[in-house]
Amino acid sequence: MAGSGSSRRTFIAGTGAAALSAQALTAAAAATGSAPAAPPAPPPPNGRRVAVLGGGVAGLTAAHELAERGYAVTVHERRALGGKARSMDVPGSARGGRRALPAEHGFRFIPGIYHNLPDTMRRIPFAGNTNGVWDNLVAPPEMMFARAGGREDLRGPIPWPGHSPAALTPDEVRRALSGLLQTLFRLPPHETAYFVNRVLVFLTSCDERRTEVWEHTPWWEFTRAAQMSNEYQRILAVGVTRNIVATKAEEASTRTVGTLGEAFVFNLLGRGADGPPDRILNLPTNEAWIDPWEAHLRSLGVEFRIGWTVREVQYGGGRVSGVAVEGPDGARHTVTADHYISALPVEHARRTWSAGLRAADPMLGRCDRLRTDWMTGIQFYLTERAPLVHGHLNCIDSPWSLTAIQQAEHWPARDFPADYGDGAAVDCLSVDISEWDRPGILYGKTAKQCTRDEVAREVWAQLKASLNDTGRTLLSDSKLHSWFLDPGVDGLGTPHPTNQDELLIHPVGTLGNRPSAGTRVPNFFLSGDYVAVDIDLATMEGANASARAAVNSLLDRDGSAAPRCTVRPLYRAPEMESAKRHDLWRYRLGLCNVFDVG
Image (tube, rainbow, N blue to C red; front, side, top):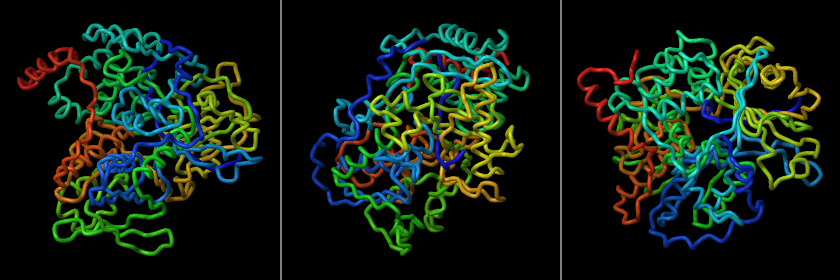
């Protein structure tokens, strides 16, 4: 093996089955590589200046919304625009006039439950696309749960009923989920019935029960995983927590896991969705999305300062008085503006909040209680396309909770060996590692204890253990060209490894520590997936929605007459509202949910 690397987030496991047409794979493939279509003229400036701290999805969304409303925006970003969502080049991999091999912090996943992010994507021009960057979304037609130990892999098409929503009564949900679980997972009937019952309990729980009870109940306990089979535990407890949100099932908030699951149930039934439950981009992320976004924002007058590190948000006179930043040359500068939006990830943002700023709003101090964990990835470049699955795969028995997707077939506008690298690599298998603290199968060490080379060899071994265990060799050492591990991970194999791009996790009882977008400081606002918005999960959708909320708060404080950003909440099925009202009555009487059999 040779290389070094990147990959990240997340394939939502546990939600697949019924087919998409072949046309769905290519309907969104469009012209690539050319300049974006001419955007509309920017609005007249209003003379107000905003400093956006951070150039990830949250920061770019805030800049986009503000620039459309006439604000002068400058984005300060330490590394590269796009943050955790960006793709990147493998250094030194380009040969013969080709582009460098494409790498990433992790594969993109943009399900139909998202509404705010797709709205932004539709407003980013892309040559040849009627709906801008949004038209670069494609839907993988299937997914797979890869089992180890000789067990048969579970492979199925992804259902998408399109514009014909399914009936949505508790009985219809029960029947649909029972059929899905029995078909895909072959669990014992009594375990299937119990899990479906737990889903119905959550679906019909009132908001108060969710916030006051399920927020403080671990998913492991809610699903009674300790009393169930290993299959049940791996698929329905660990598979939908560690593999997805990098949180252990024993401590993950049922409210968070259940809310996500509820949204996907509705998506699978065609209710309140922007599109299919599994969508990816038809090109590397920067080619399909981030680079066109940057070009569009520049056309709106947004300025970018790349390589500028935020050191301290300074406070004085009841306001943010400036931001101390370090430039690319290492020199210190003070940034001043009328308003400031902190769009850094929480683990970086809270280090920049001065003592005076924290004293002005105790909500900022509570952010210290929010927790992050490692969920990062690696790409393997192959000299021959592996016969895996036309979509995501989840290695649910892998000690390091691996999920992956083979990418070249989803990029129809690119001839991978002709366009990338040295011409020998024909595909990229992008893998997310969700568990970094459990011993592997090759060295008996955790991922953090391994060197970078050992991480690559261990992940490759775990992939083969899940994919080559039923008599066929799907992954072959001779077909491995190289690998690339996220450069944000450093110090592996030493006593103090670090990760610049950790993921917010959701243990029980942490919801109350999430801040609002508006603070008590009149010119300071928060944006990021840790900010309290309707989607209670570290996602690009959460980052986008929080940026919209921050901009709305800023407009209110500024007395602006500009239209407010639309912030779409997660879909609420009207058919379930009567059941939730009934549950509210029962909850206030101290009774359990009517479906709760214990």
